[in-house]
Image (tube, rainbow, N blue to C red; front, side, top):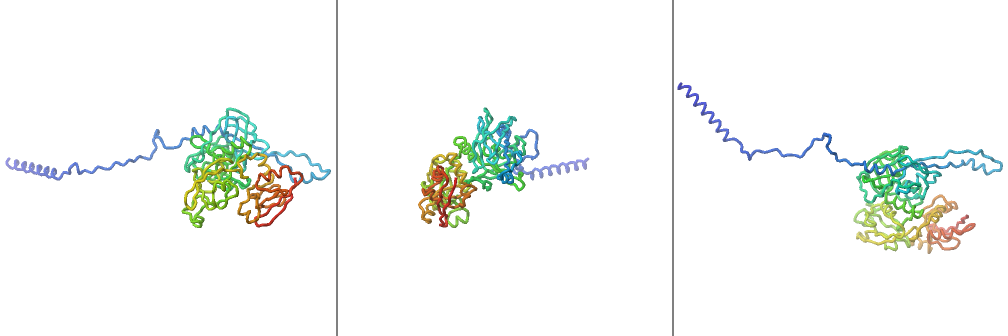
Length: 480
């Protein structure tokens, strides 16, 4: 019994010692380090979980009803063979009915009473136009006017209460913004594709067959566009019209990743002018420019390569009257940044002759703001009538007043320079690009208006006098 009691006391004492040692070395609560909570989520998708994605449903629904399918036909002309032999007496060609050539495109209804904007290349010179609405109704279309310089045209159908798209402000479009392209590719009506704005103010040199005043400042997107989309709508997620689809970049003729649209601000201006006047009232500054790159900035001592450099100013132009000088660098128009020739074209194309705006320039790297009243090609603020524009088109020329410095060098007091020459009456008599017309039938010529007036009443023929930039004087007879 004594031995058992001894074992028990020894075991009890050992237990108390172990408990005391544990308590002595137990870590305090304040020394415990808790793991930091990191806000992480699993990447698996659970039904009902909202995803951050753009919603195109409303924009698409607004757009498809206002975008139309356009079918245009062109009559085939007689062959050269038939035309040649018809000159001989006794030749009787068998009457042949040639099937018309047809093509398709798209258009955008911009007013409930049937005005439709499309591309010029969709309807130009067409003998017949048929417009099909999204609800499958068809109407004959009439061309109100065309503008090859921007590849835009305005046509009209006779109807009322039509769905239409409102113009948005294409100046506000941002690179990276979501957009929809709506049209009729491959005759698949009411097709909607989505993408983002990839770039702005793109010049892709596609309008080289225009009248010498081509305006290329496209919105570039990666929304899929194919043949038949031409003239269709580019809209933002609010359903506003921000561009007219016009071209694709492709080596095959099919969509390869990039498409191009004419900015809505240009389309609105052209459409309104064609609707009111039948001719686009185009404004001019009257300057010769160079884009500023690193080399030019270094050559001219500019702080940085931005803006467009004024290399020349035409006499009596809006630029000269506003006080613009050779060596100025245009960096803005009405507060809109200008960093390329395309951006300058796009900004000026939104104005009409007689409009006032402001031009922001750097003069010796110092900012200067100038107020300018824009003029037409002839240096006036008068409206250009359709018949006047067509008369110059028949001549196949684009004209501008001769630069004062060139006039002094050549020893002339006035003249209208041919800065663009196409197939027409003047090229047909041997006149070449750069020729400066100084007199017609011995009457002085200062601008395009003088040429229109002097040629209009002419009967039989006229004598055109002038000089080339190298000093060679020339005389041409033009018959009517």
